[in-house]
Image (tube, rainbow, N blue to C red; front, side):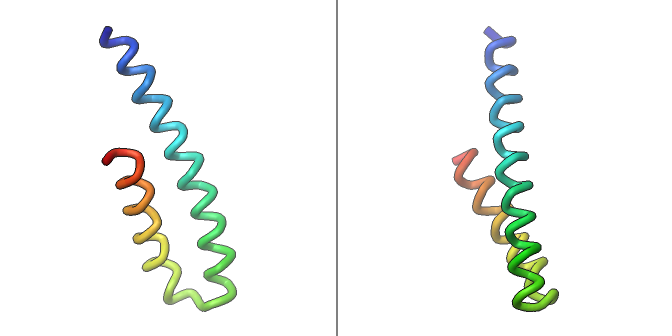
Length: 56
């Protein structure tokens, strides 16, 4: 039973890392357009949003 839970958890982590990497690329691209001072704020918001969606 624990093995199954661990596998599911690892699967969720891998999905999360893929989503966050795609968001990171997107935020970086947007950041080049709007200015670097906003990038860290956007990144923080996106990280919190994806974490809330996946672990709510």
